[in-house]
Length: 216
Image 1 (cartoon, rainbow, N blue to C red):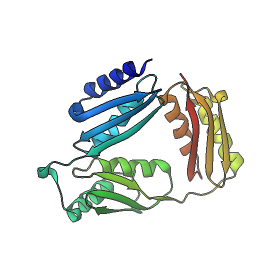
Image 2 (image 1 turned 45 degrees about the vertical axis):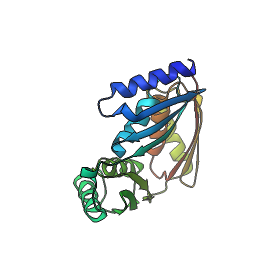
Image 3 (image 1 turned 180 degrees about the vertical axis):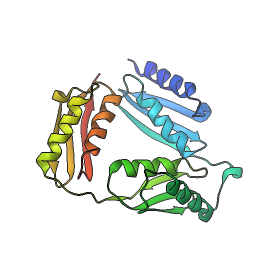
Image 4 (image 1 turned 135 degrees about the horizontal axis):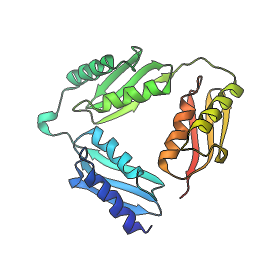
């Protein structure tokens, strides 16, 4: 797919997504690398724009340079915004009570501890949806129990083999002190995300080094 075709496809996907106001978004593409520039009205829209671009066949990576500009009527002081973020985190059953949030000029920093990566992901997702949030920085520490490296590798490979979307033979998994290293190739970003999710789902994982290539 040519750069022009890729740019048009991504722009069409952004236009198609009702959750994203694409009126001030510019799309450029170079050898599969898509860059998004311009402005959006919320951090949620910025996240959604990345996901829209990654869905397009031929996209190998996305540089999201979008700026979040909060309308005056939606601007919040930091104390009120922190209160709303903490309330949203508390009401979500997947977010542990050990997670806290700080706010500085609309920028949220999540701190504390979690036992699983999905808890960190959920906290980041919840905070990003609060009106007035400009960005979310995830500094939550993972503190899971630590099974043996062999058990972790085995469980991740089995999870990949069970997943109909993944060719487990094309992926390699290594484990060291809670860090999982993934190598190999997949045929789409959806497959890439499935493989990374399988690694994070294993008990004892504190970090995932993602070296998977998307090869069309």
